Amino acid sequence: MKRILTGLLIFGLTIQSYAQITELPEIEIVGVNYKYLDAAGEADVAEPVKMLQRRAATFDLKNSEYYQDEYDTYFISFFIPEGKILASYDRDGKLLRTAEKFKDIALPRAVAEAVAKRFPGWTIAEDVYLVNYHEAKGASKKYKLLLENGDKRMRIKTDEKGNFL
Image (cartoon, rainbow, N blue to C red):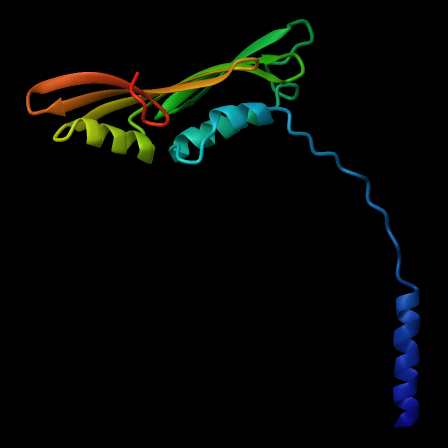
């Protein structure tokens, strides 16, 4: 019995000594359009907006069917039923600017609370979320809202923090 255990122990140690050591190639992860996501994205924005903005930020221009070496700027459109993004890329795939428009999406809490506080008794009938991003200037975000109270209608504009414009 003692010989069997000793034999198994020696056998177990010799198997480990023959294990292969493999080296994998290094992978470099590059976030090309992280500035866009930092400027245009916010935590309280609706999920369809986040999804389409991520799609525009991760778009691989060089491997797309639209890429040709002769052009310096590319305009690519992204659509979903809730909205659209027109994005401008340089020849390296860097996102230069966007024009975004989303209709009837969930409003951020700050905007909804600011409207309810300033206009009690009014309801939000329609909303449009507009984002304009420029590489050098950052992003400007605003909401255009149509308020209704019975047969009265009013249009207002706010920024993403609920400040009225």
